[in-house]
Length: 201
Image 1 (cartoon, rainbow, N blue to C red):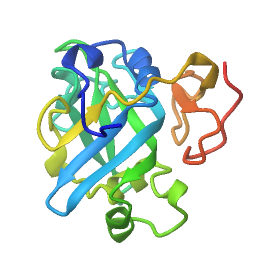
Image 2: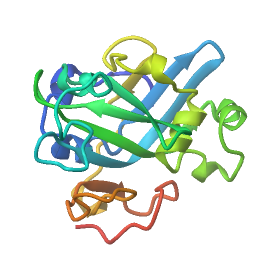
Image 3: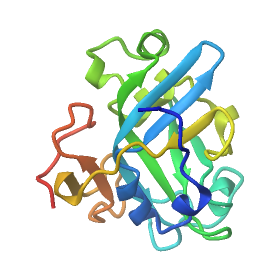
Image 4: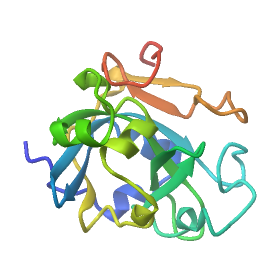
């Protein structure tokens, strides 16, 4: 399987964040760096909508920090969290309507030695088992905010879609508002998921 092609098109991303979060499972995030190719299979995501979602960065409207969320779909929204982590999101929805999907966990596929050098040094399945781990292993920073996933070094390819019978749906984690929204999606049985996973829906 080619890890970087075919890329997902803009129309794939321009949908409701909750639908996009589920459909991103099984797709491949990749980053062509000067040191080599980094890639991982997406196995856990969380959806964040706009004004109706108190946990969303866009809940109170557009700011300098979240402006990418209001732009076209298929762009990287990168933010600094807890003073230590860079978290990677995929923008959704149509231009002017905020929406994004947080990438919570990946299964490493390529560039594992580089991931270890930049990020954690634990067992391979856990190298990308959390948003902060993805940010470190991929060497992400605010310079990556606004990158276009449909072109350039950072992209998402088609990979292999995950059937419903292998997808678990649950509440989002690590937040204090709107905790009951069932906006977290994970591949059942993946050792790279960041936390406990309920049974498939």
